[in-house]
Image 1: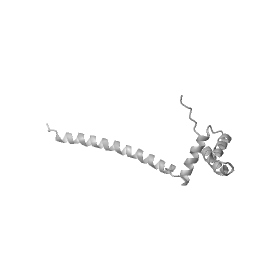
Image 2: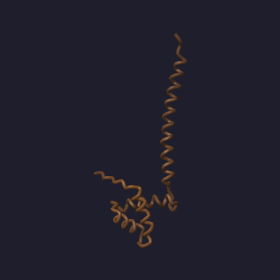
Image 3: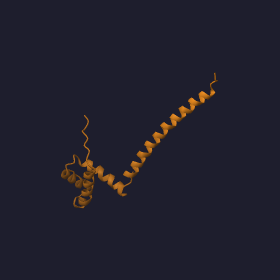
Image 4: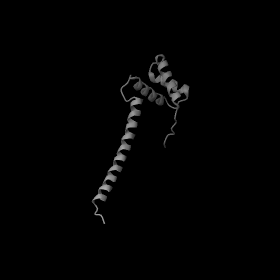
Length: 107
């Protein structure tokens, strides 16, 4: 059975990340701080907060990985690439059609 997905607002995500970074020094582990923040903000799972934290660390340059900006660029470039491939296929088909028209004998 699939779990229901819950989308959290960007403001809530930013708040949760900020809170964890602010209070993590008061807890023995970062995950303990994540659990506390998840409970306080009504976030279903501390694992959700952990993912947000890891992404924030990548964006800050504290952790290796693809930043949110780079991910958006890659996504945009993939869309653009697919669009150019479709246009190229259309142009190939059109040129084949017109080449066949030129080769036909005139009546």
